[in-house]
Image (cartoon, rainbow, N blue to C red):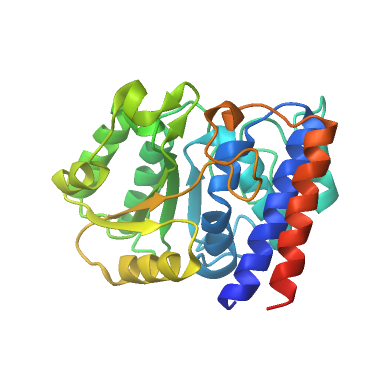
Length: 278
């Protein structure tokens, strides 16, 4: 896909995120919206996957370590064809398979159940190690939050991954600089993120995580990197695409009301129309 097609897809994913969280009357829109371009590139360009065969043994794997942004992952999976888009409106409803955090037992395309912050990178490291042990060519991707990397288990996993030279592993940090209580600097600063990963023998790349040119270049560089895992520090905007959510920590974990939903969808519709004029 070219960048324009990717931008249109990311905009559709944003619409689905807002619709799902509004329907649920709860959820986490801010970090889902910030990562829309990253989800789009992973599922429509980067990963070797087959929606018709979600358990394909040689597929690339993805672990959403920051599992609370499940609306973003679900929207990408639905857009890619893993399950019907209309099912997104059942998010968090009683009896729905699309609950508040990813569930690998019930959701096609989910490779790891997650939501307990700090644990997803460890699971991804295990998957990458298994690929090496089994002499498989698949790659493993995991997305963590900049607030989540305040968890110590992240760095235990990073230490082991670097030591084992897992060059089939890519850790993506969604660096939107906001967590539930405010900026990451105010809560417990993780900076400098790149130097921390470098200390654990990672190759690091810092990009604008809402720009497809930079995203594409980063993943291509990661593929060429041998002998060490890669960490992509993706600087993004929390709530991107919805004006009243952008860079507002309060939208970490709440749903828009009916009026806010209408405004958000109107903005995203206009954004989509503008893309069609390009």
